[in-house]
Length: 463
Image (cartoon, rainbow, N blue to C red; front, side, top):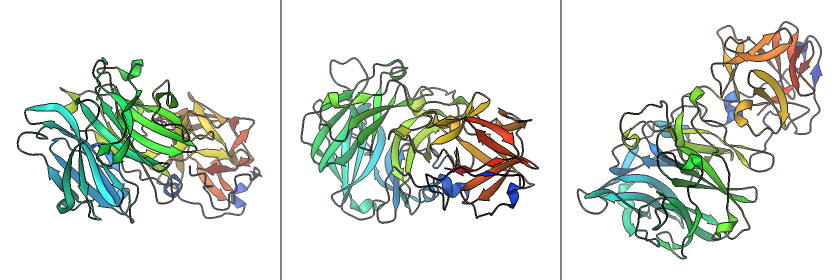
């Protein structure tokens, strides 16, 4: 977890700075730009018409991307020295499905893994005569550059306990053991897919029998189809987290979360706890529908990045599986002080995002509740604490809500609220953060959990 302070010279334990009238005359320091504070690209979508996105962690200074193409007929890889650079990077076709027979059907959800100095791609393929006879296959390359088609050879089908519908395999190493997590239809269980885990003997062979760690039973997991799929693994803060996707691939598609202790037996079903509610869902206000099938990567400084696909419209003509506009998107993954992840909402288009903390309460954040504002300690509703400073031609800014982007911070007397109009504000950089001037001699002030306007300014840190 990246708990760096986010403004130069700002120590976590610093006392509040309350400045008198004329705060704009206080010692001014150079402010870090919001893009640097946020630390994650804001181009949205990052890559159009690429579903089931997978972005590696940087390998020798390069990020690599793969994902499902709308034609479901090939495996692609692109690379760039930055996450943002993947948006325009040339895409290499490293394999195409055969014209007939095995693997001649739908090609889904490739993942690219570096294991033991070689590259592996796990992907799902149907047959030409039955495109939905989906099984998991593995490809291997000994070359350093996974974009080179010449390096790739097919290792074959990854065999599981049952010869059934199998997809979305992901692999990870923990405490010296290599694991596979995947989605499968198990005989005699009346759901479409559940999630399983096993230890691996090598990158294309299971070593142990599978353990089912979740099956779709909750109301949000069984809309349209009874699905648990698309697992992604993140190990942080003494825990192993597995996100997964649920329900049909339309606007009902969403993400759930499994958690195990990092010291637990990961092959034991009882080691895993399912969060009761989805952790990432459609958000009408930002026009992001059906977010899911995610992966995780990191920025060069170690900031965790959520990678996922979502559409920007809700109504789909025909089978959503054949709608091409599931686009790859990225946003920052945040962490609660108890070590659990905060996903917020799919943030939609716009510039970099910040959160505001009073300098005397660095783990508290400005938060809107409806259209009112308050300051809460470590709120779990991440999306209520996220804002964008939107610059106007005259150099002033308005403060836009991220989860309600049609609304802005608005001043009425000493009251602070959200509305469609927005009050122009000016940020003033000071030693430990910024002050926010809302009118000549008037500033945002935090007082006992309330956000108000006064002639004395509270210093806010941006994070």
